Image: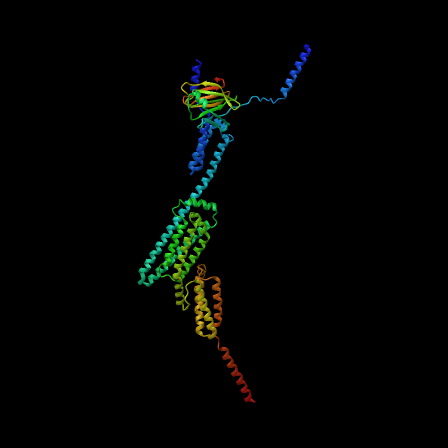
Length: 394
Length: 149
């Protein structure tokens, strides 16, 4: 009877191994820890939170066994540690979510930029074709060129705004954020550097086209190039490290090379266009092929004419002075001045030196008046007349 | 004469008591040797098991010989409050109870559990006894150093 009771009692009671309980706890704890560490979304974390609660509820009655097994740790410390990890993951995920949002916004922004630029480029290309086709209608061609110029100016303004935006965003980027964006940027189908590549390539194409553009247009292009270069100089390193973390140095060099190619394309047109513009206004400058020789040509023109005026002081010298002064002041300085400086064609001090020499030329070329001499002769004649009158009266 | 003998004996007893009192004798009572959890140990190629946590290392060849077995994957070991070690393994018919001596484990008792051999045995430390669970059959046995309770 006793044996039967023993057997009955031993089969009815749910049998468990304390060793197995603590093993199961360790396994579930370890699995939950891995899940917390690798959770990639807020939804995953929410599920884990419920599982942590369940783990605590399921094993709290065995806490003594578990405490003995994991000494010097304790069951409550392990659960607290898991919750701490959970909280930390939650914070990290919130940061990742925020970063994902930023990346998504950046991606949308880039798409928007690209789309608007593509549409502008299309309009400009279309205008360019129309200009070519309208070669027999001068008036229509002039109107198209005017429109073409306006479109390029709009595009310049748009690109400048975009560069300003990029500069504000990346100029003071701290290294931690930069690294986070760099990790996230691998998921992006487009990035700011790729956009800059497209923009520079398109600018180079504009400069290479023969579209009836004139000196002011190329001066503006140089200015745009100058601004672009300045922005790249400020944020290029950070952008490269953020969006080309595997090869930042090569990426920077590639963009630098593209900027140089763009400048070369502008310069191919710019110096000839400037020569033509000065010629059309009666100013024959010595040949120039870059910013330095352009300044030399201007300075030499003013200096040589100043010296000539010192020697001959003829009306035609003064006329030449007036022609140069008007074009210099009213067109070159007034309309192109800022662009010349930002495009690094002329510096402020170079303009000031030309102004100074121009002032000397103005003084030297001023025709001398004969009025004084005539007055002297008249006065002399009057005095002689009076003397003769006095002598004859006596 | 008798008085002298009594005096001499009394002095001898007093001397013995004095000597005994000067020796290194100290007994600590109510020591709890119990392991809260059993140890599950895998024998090496020499049939040696080593419990790092509770610091005991011994050879199980003698136990295997008694069970008529040549090897086991793992043995289960637990120590009760009195300091007796209980050892068994899957396939064993018995639980072996050992008491410790100077570098020795002396078999105190062999408790027969099943003639068919235990399926998935596990020891649990319980108040006043060791619980042996066979998870394969669901059977539970309460043991102490004297045998089944």
